[in-house]
Image (cartoon, rainbow over all chains, first blue to last red; front, top):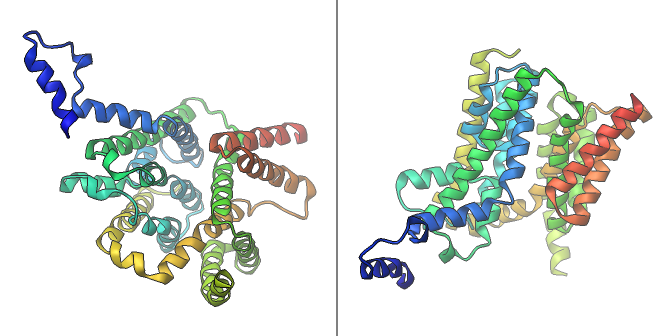
Length: 252
Length: 108
């Protein structure tokens, strides 16, 4: 806190105010820090946003659905799935259950996201709304004192803007250039392969992905229409049933 | 094309559930931390859910048709291998997508 009063003191000493670029206002400093924090993530989010916009338009939806999906839901993986489900006219109950299962992982983010650093009811609401995987990853590992309210919110706003902006750009491009790029369809699958690889490598347990693969294949054969829900249900149930074994093995 | 009411309901449901799942835990954050079943599932779920989602996305692949199987599964393998090697998301996705584009071009 001592250093924050420094610029004000030096200003008071000089009769002519220093040029704006040299005045380190806390707000401006936080914005710059936030921009540096998200510099590695925002270009990727923008590009995936473009892909999402193209997918929306290719599914036969009007371009303006893109900012509605991306702006209001703000959950990339779920949004891609929803477009595929909506194009197949999936029942709304299936959409609700898929949202619940795909976004269920967010339940665990509250434990380490520095929400206590964010001041103001409205800002806290936005911080919770925009608690995407990337925001969690970029803030949870930082020492809490380093992140101010402005810095956290600016990081989230920049990522939100990248995702929505990319989506609108992609949807408009897909609208004006009726070019279908089949290879781009794979980019979405590739995102999930990467997320699956990351989760499996972090989990450090080969049994989990293998069990999930088995559940998915069984569900695909048993009930192709309800594959997602059946497979996730089976996987959760089996993990709970197998818990005594896995716990015992860890303590052994 | 899906109708407007259905799409609006889809956005509303997904947005409400997503926000609820992001916001609600903060109210019970301390209880959540000590619930061992929640912690246990929290560790087990991420990799499993992602694998299931990948299989779901590949559900149209016909394994009995070698050409279709290779076109889909080789890029998946390349994506996973590149990511495991370099731990770079965009690089992994790029390598897989380029492989997929090549497979499409080669098989016509």
